[in-house]
Image 1 (tube, one colour):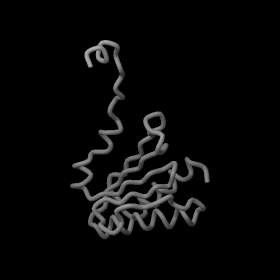
Image 2: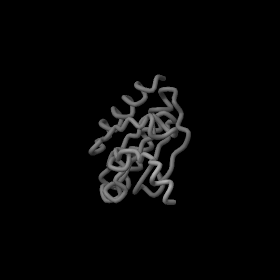
Image 3: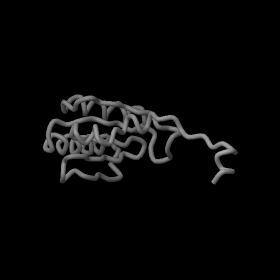
Image 4: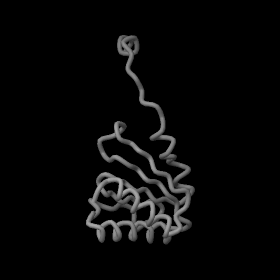
Length: 119
């Protein structure tokens, strides 16, 4: 499955599962871990678990088995790693605490000769 189709499939599943505040971040060039990070909120730990399980199931059904999942048992924060697309599902309080959108939108630090001379 092409990466764009996988991203669209995940967003569709999140929308169908009534995930809130779906955010898609293109992180190509910022990390070698993935191309897209998708962050969404669930309304309860059960909702977060159900969304994560459904995303994993639908991706596998479409031919893209997850490389792994984390946090599904606890339900405050679940991660589904689909290689080119990493999905973070969180309760709103956890999402506010980690603020992944702000973290990944921050400009990259640029080294400067004067900074390394003072080290």
